[in-house]
Image (cartoon, rainbow, N blue to C red):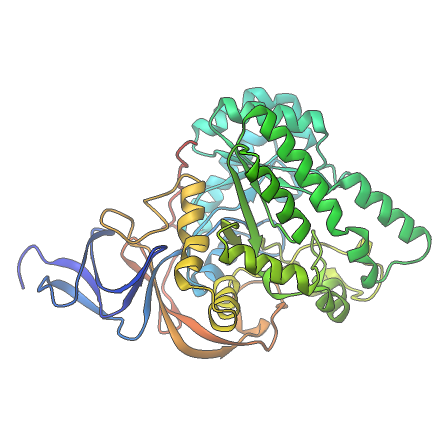
Length: 459
C-alpha cells in the first residue's frame, strides 16, 4: 500500500445526494472527504468499509429539537446517532426552567458549553426569543450573530407561558435580524384565537383529547402565517416557517411565493407526515403537540408539497416528556404537557413512509433532511453533502433491514414512542462523523467530549 493511501474508503455502495444516485467509492482522510471515485479507480485506503447493496448518504442534519425536557443533549445526541443523524441544531433560550440564569447571551454560552461537554455529535444552535428578551433585543442580536448563532425563533402563540410576541415585537425582531444577516424561524399560530377557543371549550367542560384539535384549527396557522409573511414581505426579510401542518398554511405560502416575496423556507415534521387526529383520539395526551395532529387530507397535501419542491426541511420537533407527566391521558388535555418524542425515529420513519410507501425519491429526502437544512442554517458544504472537502459525516443505510419500533428499543429517557410496534423497512448500519465511526453493528462507539460547536455562516 502506498504511503499516500487514504484513511478509509467506503466501497461499493450507492452514493446519494440531492441530484442523483450513483455507484461510487468515498475516500476519506483526516476526517474530510478526500475524493469521490468511480468503482475500480485503483485508489487505496488503509481501511475498507464494504457498502455493497447499501445506500451511502450524508449524515442527517436535524434542525428542530428541544433538548430541555426529559432529554437533553447527552441522550438526544446518542439517540440521534442510532437514527443516522450526525448534526443537531437545537432551539435554546434564556428560560430558567431550562437551566439558564441570565439573558440570551448567557444562554448561548451555557448551551455551547453543555453541547461541548455532553453531546456526542457536532451541533449548532438556534435562539428562542420570548417576551423577556425584548428589552435587550437590539444589543443582543448583533453579539449573538457574531458568535455564530444566526437563527432566532419567535412564537405567535403561548401567551400563558410567557412566550407570545406581539406584532410590534415581531417587527422589531425582523428588522434586527435583517440588519445582522439573521434568519427568523416562526411558530405561526394565532395565539389569541387559540386561547379564546380553548377557554370557551373549557368553560363548557369540553376538555377531552377530542377537543384539542378544534381548539387550534388549521385557520389559526394559516392566519398567523399570512401575517408574519406580510411583515417579512414589507421589510424584505427571509423567513423560516417551522412545523407547517396544514393545507391552508401551504396555500398561504404559495401565494406569497407567487408575489415574489423575500425568501421563504418551509419546514414540516415527521409526525405531521405520518400521524393524524385519529392518533390523538387513540393516544390521548401522549399525542398532544402544537400545532395539533391534523387530518388525512393535510398529511397528503404535505407529501404533495414535498414532491413539488415546496417544502425545504423535515425535522422532528423533538420535545419528549415522560409518560407520568402526560397523565391522565384522557383527562383535561389543555392542562397536559405538549410535545412529542421522535429524535431516533425521525429519518427511518420518514424514509419508510416517503420512500417505501409513497414513492418519494431518496434524493428528495436527502435534500430535505441533510442538504437543505445545512444550506439554510449556514453549515453547507461542510455538512449536508458528501463531496471533496466536506466533513466525512456518513450514513450507510441498509434498505433491506426490517425492524419494529418500540419505546424500549430506543435510547432516550422519554419512555414512550409515537410509533410503538410500527414495522419499518430500512435502518442505519454504520454512522460516521469526521471519519470517526460512531455506530457500527448496532453498537454506539461515540463518546462525550468529541462534539464541535458549528458556527453558522451569515445569510
